[in-house]
Image (cartoon, rainbow, N blue to C red; front, side):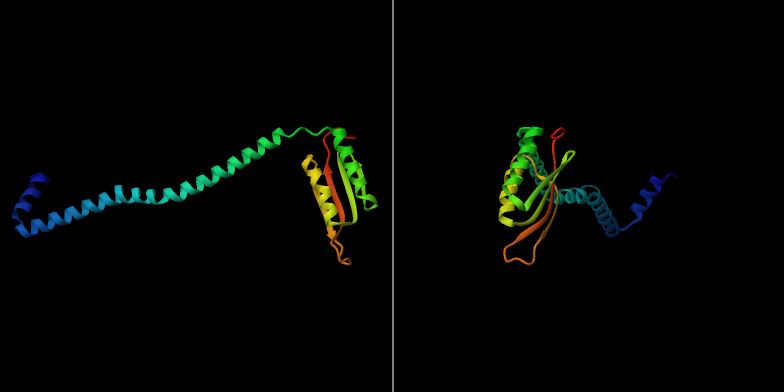
Length: 163
């Protein structure tokens, strides 16, 4: 006898109540498998969609901001080497005896002695606008004065052939 025939004989031998109970148990097993294989993974995916969408939207916004910044930088005129050095020298002269500019190769070092924070900020703004931002800064606030005064150095990277 095959296993199918054996199963049919046993099924026929069961009482109606037992057959109903086994059918309900089989239905529960089938529903559990259906839930575990098809429904539960789909629900997990649906729950994770909103956080992923928000993360991707934030990433897109960041990338678009970087694109705008890159476009702005590309639109900026290139620094002319001689002009950038002249700009730094004239700006250093504007700070008076409290600032000295030393040029060594493609780096210009501005040494500051007790320069007010306001003067320094007013001096740095046009430099940054022209593309000459410090690549290194070592500044200390002078504690002995009532006004915020700064002493230290600012290092600028000059375009090639600025000397």
